Amino acid sequence: MAHPKRKISKTRRDKRRTHYKASSPQIATCPTTGEQHLYHRAFWHEGKLYYKGQVVIEKEVLA
Image 1 (cartoon, rainbow, N blue to C red):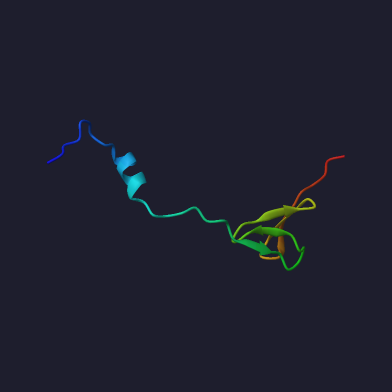
Image 2 (tube, one colour; image 1 turned 90 degrees about the vertical axis):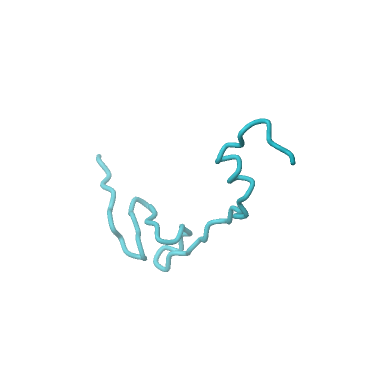
């Protein structure tokens, strides 16, 4: 019976055993601005922070 010369680390073992693949993130389009963003994430557009099509924060411009 074959025996390994060195201990295989848990990380190396688990990397070999995994079958999960990286997938591309899902992109949503905002109904208000038409901007593309990640699902369930707020995004900035023209100085305003949008979430679910509504303005959450407006960035003030200091003059």
